[in-house]
Image (cartoon, rainbow, N blue to C red; front, side):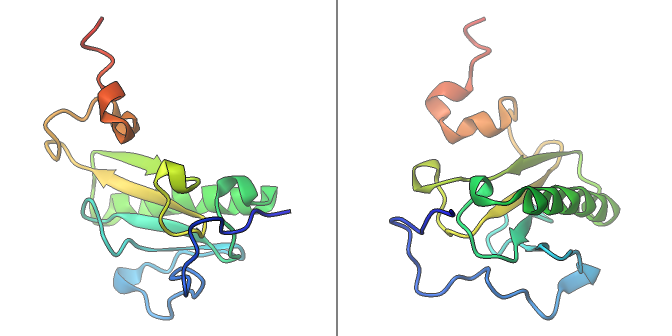
Length: 139
């Protein structure tokens, strides 16, 4: 049974409606999920893969929904490669309020990265906890 939106209730879910119009030919979707631009991008081309069914996070998805999301992550990467030609990617999900999730509807960030967009990108997603991200200095 899916978890409820414990502590993160929102008056209206911004992800429960699949946008009718999509920019730049971004019309990636399947029966269970869709792709849209992030409204607060951290880099050019930052996309979200969002489930069509309202559920909290990755761990609440069915196996079929997880497969659908993974398929769209790959399609989003191909779309971004053609339009933005990034040098690398960060792929990530925040699962739960303590992990930083602010919209309680499952979504995965596909963040294109570009050479020089960060002084030192080592550690990637480890920077969610900056005091523990730099593990290589102690080596």
